[in-house]
Length: 128
Image (tube, rainbow, N blue to C red; front, side, top):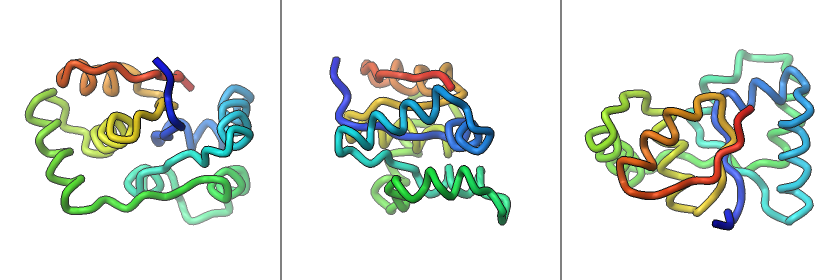
């Protein structure tokens, strides 16, 4: 399976802020392929603490922050019902990764897998 980009969860943003080598390697690889990673808006809300967060700010310059539309919110709710997961931010990460056929950089691998399994799909997952 080939992913067409990368979606970050909160753990990925926090890993970047603590200057995690693997996280920055994933980020550089995505940018080198001309595929700016996607950060769901809820993920940014969970990770942002008002600054200064220099590494996170640096990472975000190369990312696309995706708002949660009504259509996506409804899909996230449907995924919650199907998967039994209640964390709407993780659900939004999985929904976006599935919709865009993107790999997911996450610290909650089991949550992302739970959602993908519920719909009979697989996601490339990078644990950070």
